[in-house]
Length: 358
Ligand SMILES: O=C(O)C(=O)C[C@]1(C(=O)O)C=C[C@@H](O)C=C1
Image (cartoon, rainbow, N blue to C red; front, side, top):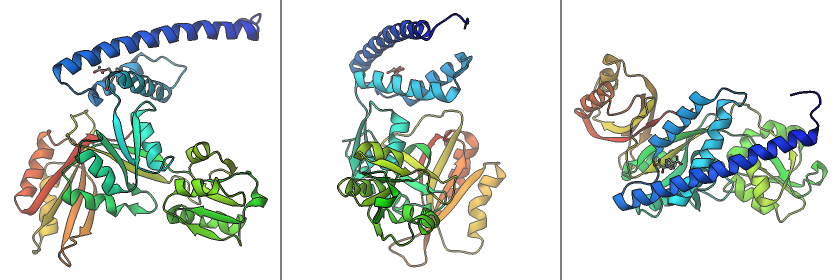
C-alpha cells in the first residue's frame, strides 16, 4: 500500500475486486447447474461429500495467505452449499427447535443454503431420514462434560441408518434477555445441562434468582422473547434468532466444553483417507470375553478411541457395546478385526465409517 492512497481509493479497489468475485461466483454457479442437469439425467447423487473434500483440499493448497485455511473452508462451504441448492437443495432433519446447538452443527456441516428442518425429538430425526423425507439427520451424541447422549446410542439398536460424518462444536453459553440489562433479570430459563454448566456463575452473579428447567436452550430463548423480566441461557445464534440482547457472554464455568454431533444417512460414506469407524455389538456372557473382544484390534494395531456400554433394555444385566476406532471399514486391518469380533458376537452392526472431525 502506498502512503498516498486514500480510504476512498482503497474502497474503490475493494469494490472492483468484489465485482469480479460476483461475476466469477455466478459463472461457477452456472457450471454447477449444468453438473446438476447432467446428474439428473444419469440418476446420480447431487450431494457428493468426497468431491467437496477434494475442492476444500485443493483450495487449501492454492492458498498462500494472508487469509487462513479456516476462512477459506467456511467461504467454500457456503459457495458449494449455494451451488448445490441450485442443483437440488439438500434436506437435513435436525434436533430442533431453531437455534439449538444441533442447528448450529447442521449449519456448520451443510452451509446456509441447505434446507434445514427442525424435529421435535431424536427418534423423529431418524424417522425423517429412514422414510427418505430428508437425506441427512443431525443429532448430538456426546458432550465433553456431560458424557454420552444415550437416546442417540439407543436409536442404533433398531435403526439401520449409517453415521456419515461427525461435527465437533464448542458449546459456549450466553445470558440473553429482551433488555440486555442485568438488573432486569428476575428469572432464568434454560435446559438443565446448560444451567448445570453455568452453576457457579449464576450463584455469584444472580444468587437469588429462580432457575427454570425447559426442554432446550432455544425454547428458553423463545419464552424470554415474550418476557421483559426473564433471561435465557443459550448459544449466541439464539440471540439473533429470537431478537434478544446479550447480557453477558461465555458464562459457562468450564471452558473447552465441546459437543460431538453425528450426521446419519441411508448410505455408507466413502473413504476420505482419515476416517473413523463406529460399531455396535453384544457378546455372550462368559469368562475372558472382554479381553477376547478387544484382542483382534490390538493384534492388528487398530487404534480404539472409545468404548461405551449400554444395558440391553429387554434383558437385565446384559450389555451392548459401542466401539470407535481409527480407519475405514474398507481398509484391511479394520475390516478383518471387525469380522473376527463378529465370530463370537451375538450380533454386530457397523454404524458407519466417516471422516474424523477437524
Ligand atoms: O461436482 C459436483 O458434483 C457438484 O455438484 C458441484 C459441487 C460444487 O459446488 O463444487 C456442488 C455440490 C456437490 O456436493 C459437490 C460439488
